[in-house]
Length: 178
Image (cartoon, rainbow, N blue to C red; front, side, top):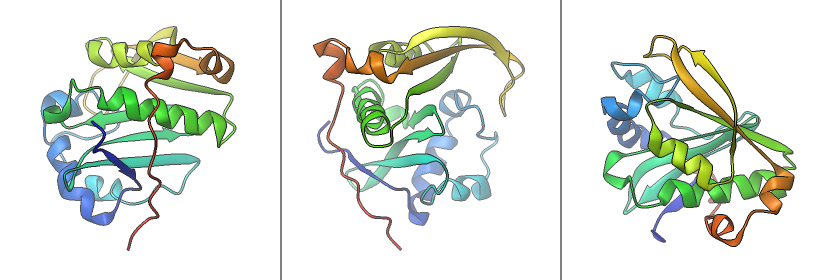
């Protein structure tokens, strides 16, 4: 797990991200990604983020296996199915949350999961997020589906128990490459 590098996305990452976006069980959990996968859309996500927040590409053994992002106040993540179940998202998302609260001055974060994504529900719970509301939401590849919304305050993050805090990871904020 310690061999996962976090860095800004690069144009050359699109093929690895496209492989993730070509996996239906994964892409159906990502609200804005199209199906069937579209190369132009994937390429648009394969560059440094210049909005309010950040996106980290997750690189392991020379290939991008996913991403973790905080855009505005929202936490999002995706992971190649071959890398699932190893605690990677929990660890890197914990570092992203810590960065957002400590370095960026965020006061709260939100995240959402579709009702048929228990793994993501567990990740958010492990990170200290609290269920806040339930709504029916339409995604790019879904009819309106029940979605659970979570939130996490900076104050709650500061008071989490040691097991929850252990999800924090050191980040390697590499500069965006050409």
